[in-house]
Image (cartoon, rainbow, N blue to C red):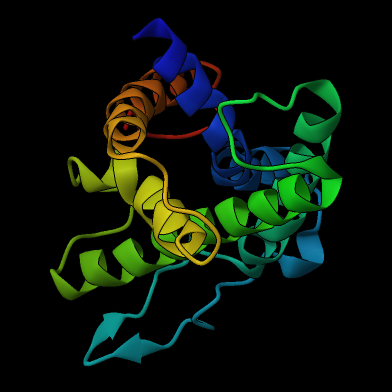
Length: 178
């Protein structure tokens, strides 16, 4: 069981990094020229499309950061448990997971606005899993993980997200605990 948890975390690391990066980049004032809302402040049937927190900075950085993390993973450790071989496949895996993470976040932000929920409001369990669902959905282009791994990814990712958000809140990186 511990092995599948470790493999799940390692496998999803490009998505985790892509999901966390927008807050870090914002804190470091990096890529400020892209700190504009993806929806350009427009609305859809009287409600924001995504909201002001979904920026081009996050959308643009996700595939690049995913690719970079995939590259690092290919250098550090290529577990035999994964059906990937070589740098190119790990970079592609990173691009898909990073892109899927940010697209999942955007999709659920769109749904959240349609339901009338405000930016930053709590929406359990989707606040914790939106990026994971998006990453796994886009990953289906290349690979479908075994069911046991998907279940482990969902459970572990939900718990890690809660812990990471609490730490980010205590470090004043984000304004909410969730």
